[in-house]
Image 1 (cartoon, rainbow, N blue to C red):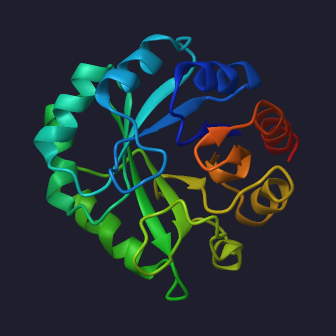
Image 2 (cartoon, rainbow, N blue to C red):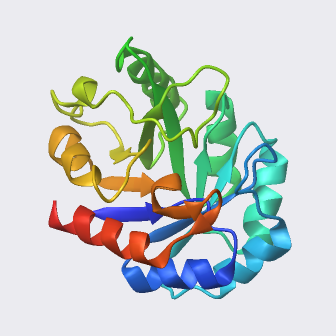
Length: 217
């Protein structure tokens, strides 16, 4: 089970996540988030991680050029698009950032997976299919970090064959991540608020419990 700890704001927290067994840490560049980091801090975190942990930039409706600059300046190895970025932007990023992993976030509502399927088909035609899809809860007016779980029942029938890898996100905690994994059968999981002692402040004990619970499931 691939595990990403998102919304890391400083190097000590990133190192705790790495020591707990995380495969990636998310560095949030969205100004509207309580977990936002600047480029200098992100570069320090990325440079201080072991090679086994992937520093991932989380972006919300940033311009493609800004994303490319940030990736290069900070030494990021993955990009997570968590806004309303059009398919053409993924194609641009594919061309500008060869070898960088791209995660397309999707806020899942009661209309199910059909809209995501149409988006993935557009991306496939552009040669810009993402490496993974991160499925989060849909909350009107919010881009993520809501603490709400996605509608797992819509994933219980199985992730369609041929789609990018599924990363489950949204309201995960050490207590419910096992149930989420057993229901949705994802390739990976992503957590932010569920391992925090306060908004934006990661808790070492919760981090370790989350990783253990996810690995066990």
